[in-house]
Length: 94
Image 1 (spheres, rainbow, N blue to C red):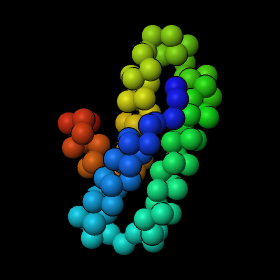
Image 2 (cartoon, one colour; image 1 turned 30 degrees about the vertical axis):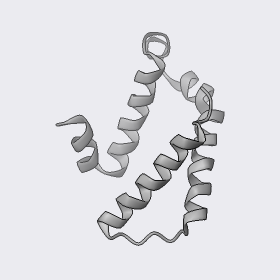
Image 3 (cartoon, rainbow, N blue to C red; image 1 turned 90 degrees about the horizontal axis):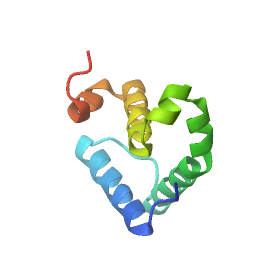
């Protein structure tokens, strides 16, 4: 998996700015620092994708597509972060 194109990183950057602004949640980063954080997170995902894949049980490693593995990780991260947001995306999770 390669890093995202710059246009997609910009979309994430803009989306996060809107998200935090709509929540009226203070964001202690300026725009340049947030953009650097998006770039770093994307680079980290790219650098650690093989490690994530190796951590999965063999059936998941061999049976799930790359997109399904990504969605699995996103679901776990969202559950740890914000179950309401997870439900908004996935529907009921109980």
